[in-house]
Image (cartoon, rainbow, N blue to C red):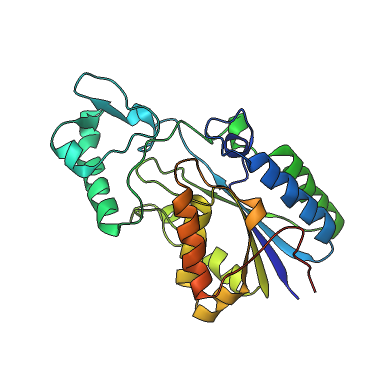
Length: 266
């Protein structure tokens, strides 16, 4: 059996209690996942690790926006296209307003998520961008023992669009291939017999990545290869319903669920 493990954004800013966008329970998720890798290291054929990779100046960070008094929005503020048209919010740099408004309108049209302002997180080059240490150690041990290379997939460096999914940005930029469909990742996963799913956060980046992988599978029945490790992923507080909706949606299409302890590779 060709077993692939897809780990979404297992980074310090999400998984460490000191991280800027800490997901409560994520450090325990990563500990359980590390134990699974140690247990199954001789059976795992490939490990894919996605990395949220942002810049300080980003359309989803506070510094991009200001209100009529010149104040930046607080983290977790939602900004709508209507609010920008009405002047409640505008961009710090006036030249960025028109493109930002077009982005918000397209995001509304797609209907997946509202535009949320996040704390600055997973900044390229910062400690928060690194993989949670316990999990990193298990991945590197797997690489050494198997003489294999973990597949690290970066996303999110284009400042003009949110990039929850490792497959494509929320609003792809036609001039930036890194925001468009990652066909290589999808085709690699198609070659697996079983795809274990884990990482942060269940409500956002994991949910969107798995949805997009499923949408771009050449054969819809490939969704039945997917197995979500429910004790290795948690939701952003306040967005728990997003995670539950995702599980119900994908389970109805054939995705299975189990835990790190219950899963036994054949």
